[in-house]
Length: 250
Image (tube, rainbow, N blue to C red; front, side, top):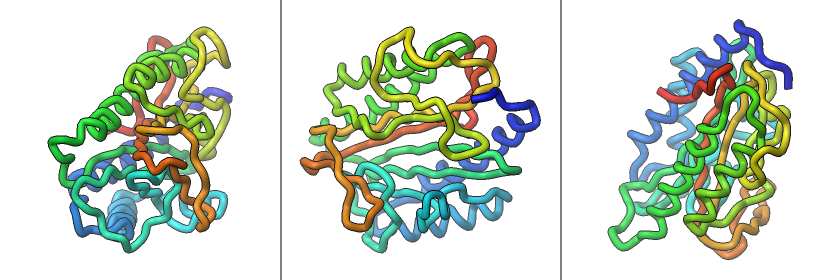
């Protein structure tokens, strides 16, 4: 991946700001009885107001602007009319294009909060978010992709979560998916070297049980084979000379 120009970085900052604004609106609005299609409509209207374009719509044929995956749905679920229920663990994965530049981010949350006895659900959400920031903390010029991967895997294994190996982080910017791939497992000091100006999406994806997944009959939704719940957190990040800048946060 070539480093982005300053003009491209400025566009990605704005794209990321829009994306973060939409995800924050979703986070503070979603409730039991609301449907994924309701959320898709909400996101579409807010993004239009902000002046961005949805990056997912039409990407590899995807039919909606957002992926909304609940409980044992791991990723890529098309928004449906099935209402959310209290205690559902739901992932919202979204992408925005602005002036030709793409950012990608995701957040997982529990609708209405988790039952006080659901320690496993709390562990899933807390640890997966911790993995994201553990990986981000390794980002700087001269670091290796494996440094990010190893940091994520360390937190993941300490919390006894499943590693979904088929789904990985990636470069982002001109396209949704660019080089390099950023697995959520690996060894420090290995893999491609990061250079200032690179933009990457880091996204740990975990399960409470088996890490094995399969594709549903709709041709999109990925599910855990054992029915265990899954979570994902993601940010688009700019590599800087002395560290990083998170592009997709409010």
